[in-house]
Amino acid sequence: MVTRWKWILSRVIKRPWFRASLFSALGVGTALLALAVDQYIPDDLPARIGSDAVDNILGIIASSMLAVTTFSLTTMVSAYASATSNVTPRAIPLLVEDNTAQNALSIFIGSFIFSLVSIIALSTGAYGGKGRVVLFVMTILVILLILYALLRWIDHLTELGRVGQTSERVEKAAAKALRHHLKQPYLGCSPLNANQEIPGGARPVHSDAIGYVQHIDMQALTELSESRGSALYLHAVPGSFVEPTRPLLSVVGLEEDCDPQIRQAFSIGGQRTFEHDPRFGISVLAEIASRALSPALNDQGTAIDVIGRGVRVLSLLADHPCDPSPTDALHGRIYVPGLEINDLLDDFFTPIARDGAGMIEIGMRLQKALASLSRLGDARLKAAASRHARLALARADTALTLDEDRLSLEQLAAQLKRSDEAY
Image 1 (tube, helix red, strand yellow):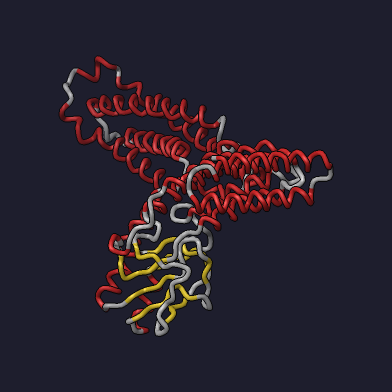
Image 2 (tube, rainbow, N blue to C red; image 1 turned 90 degrees about the vertical axis):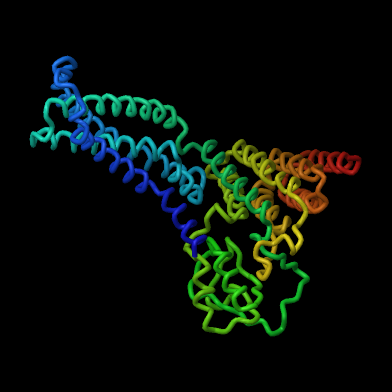
């Protein structure tokens, strides 16, 4: 359960309201801090620094921050709408979790709350002369923080929601998820190979919800299996779509009274997430390229850019270590299927090769990208890349209308194949 709550907390922290609430609370605390420290201020200091000016400054901050916050929210909503139309709706969660946007918006809201609370306290006479000195210093610090946030926000607005920036965010999210998976290819459990047979007496445990597996609390499953001396064989991993007729896992040595605890270890939601699902990030990248190749956009440049990003992400597969032995597993009684390289390449290259089959520039870029992956030294990656190179060439051969284009692409594919064999 601890692992599950950590995952839930990490999801909450990324929500915009959490950081805005934190800065708002900080603004209230800062405004009231002057009431606690005014006894340490020299008696003649208020006359020397002119602390009476704090009233006007706070009024300016309150009115301007409300306007800036409204403008920022409008801009962010427009950027999300633009990304939805021109990139893909699946990338919107990454934009919502943007640290720069959340920090700027939180600082603006926190400054507004600070000025509002300070004005109310001044109106009630809560601050004396020395309290005004502390409030004046705090106000200057808040102004410096606002200036810093404004400068970063202005620079960030030039890229917010643009296709290139959004594609970069998806690439980073996909690469992060794939790196995390490659460190623990079986979620820290024992491998469940495709040709491995599950014991005949294993009992399936079905989901009581319909949706995507977003997270699995392996610690909870381990505690359950070790206490009963049982074995668990997972069928659903993060990213799998489950429903009541599809088993989450098969268990050996556990009675039906343990089923509620088993189901509770699986966090199921209506949408896939990037954190523990590398295939989702790869699929979203492919979706960006497919949308760019649609007749409505006809943006081959973006598709070519995304192909390059996909190669960067998939090249991580050639750097991963060998599959860990069962003795290295943290959760040795749990067996988990691995991630197939063929599935990753299918998720990425199949939609792009299909939608760009009639475009010679896309066909050539696909052949070069697949040749690059095949030269990375991983035998499984080379076999999968060679298969997709043949499929992409076959699709292009049926879609290209000009014989010269077909001949050029076939010559390029043959040239790249010879170079791969020589390599």
